[in-house]
Amino acid sequence: MTEATVVNLFFTFRVALVGGILFVYPRIARKGLVFGTYVGEAQAEGDEARHLLRSWNRATGMLMLFSLLVGWCISLAGWPVTGNLTGTAILLSLALLLYVWMYQKARALASTDGPPVRQASAPFAVDETRGEGFAKVALGLCVLAGLAVVCHATVQYGTLPDQIPTFAHLFGLDETLADKSIVQVLFVPSLNLVLSSGFALIALLVSRAKRSVRGGDGGRSPEAQDAFRVVMSQTLGGMALFICLILSTLSIQTMRVASSRAASLNGVLVWMCVAMILFALACLVRMMKGYGQGGALLESGSVEAPLTGGLADNSHWFLWGTLYFDREDSSILMESRFGIGYTFNFGNRTALLITALFLLPLVLLAFLVLTGAVS
Image (cartoon, rainbow, N blue to C red; front, top):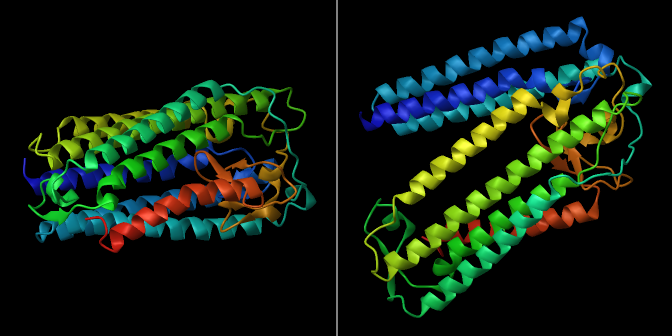
């Protein structure tokens, strides 16, 4: 099998996966929500909302075909990697534009539903925090392993030669060596500590996330959200452990190669990455098929009850229904309106602090790469 064939198969799978998610998502969203806007339960089942869904399906199919044709044509011209990247970029960018267009249509639909669309935010306390134990264990393991790998790299620094392999060298792309520096040596261990601990912390926050429930539904909505919150927390905690395992292994093997104790990176890293991807896909399918966003598929029998809380309040959602801002809502996390999972309440100072603590190290590490401090 040629390299071009492998690249094209991977590209086709990616388009099918992204397109499949785009097709499925409107069918697993919370009742009353239409493309990032709360329009009310009755409007969401009406003819106009159904017309929007049919338009979304047709446009998604055309986007998939167009991106595949562009990618394949560029690949057949002799540039398979360029075709892969170009076709993927076309699909993602046009899908974003399609969503923005649908969001504007849904906003117009919501404006006909009257005052109930703009209910006040209602903070609901979490009675149980199922899934919190696993998230705490994952966070503890990621912090300990991350610090241990940082210490290992620091101790090994003095034993390394003045010239060490670059990351391109490690992955077999060239034979370039770089001057030894503490930044170069500690890059992967630091990335490990930030990424794995960050994912585990978000898993812990999700396990304690507050809810927007349906009034008068006999408890079915809280139960559905509890179930979704647990599986989401477990997924993020599992991803944190995978990231920690992969980056810890990469860091240790990098030290071995740099000190000439090994000729190259061990192929086990590839299988670890494959296992993480399969785990993520399995969890995504499980959530989309069995739970729906926020447990929507488990709310059967209560879909006529109106949604409450910040999730039903259009006035606090910005950037096409993707960002939530409400200083009067004590929630740190709010269930996403479009997408699987949660978003931060950027009106909460704690949420802003957590976001900064997670993003600033990543921005710094990216800056070091762009400036050539890490190669």
